[in-house]
Amino acid sequence: MSVSCLCSAPDDKLAQLARAEYDAATDRVRLFFVKPLKFGRIQQPTISAATLTDLAGNPLDGNGDGTPGDSFQILFGRGTNFSIRDSQGDVASLKLTKGGVIDLRQPPGAATPSLTLIGATPGVSVLSGKVKKSRTGDGRVSIASLAGTTGVDLTKLVRCSSAVATRCLDIGVLSAAVVDRVLEHLDWGKVGSGLDF
Image (tube, rainbow, N blue to C red):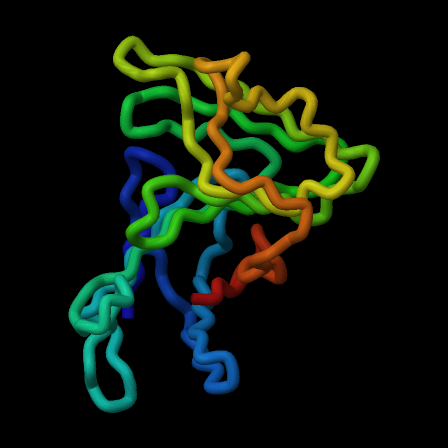
């Protein structure tokens, strides 16, 4: 099986898969890559339906619509700072300082990414963020959700409000609890690190 991985635009490189392990108890597949995943970069692996089948020989249903034959894609990254460009060209710059990492994921069919802060130090960690408006954009970058913010200083995060209508982050759900830790155990930057799907 091969996994096409858009590791940082405009590079489209083929990431070699070392092995895949299926866990029947959780109904998840964990992928182990030959080379380490890049810390601090947004990546987009594509798993081809033509190269992955279940035990009965059915091709992958990558978009989860119940019809086999679709490739699976997810946009993800883990690091302390990211730049996110929306469809209008506006760019959000996010940075987590003084402890922790940002886990970014945008699953198939989702229009905007979700962010989870992992390992942030309450009362110490600071999340800052701002938006650079493009000539054709509205100056707002949407984030589906932001979780794991307990005790994190968010005063430097420019959020959209009635007082701030442009050059801001439009955050759908702001949650103090870390709801989804799918990638938390992943050891980024080490050969053979795994990724759960």
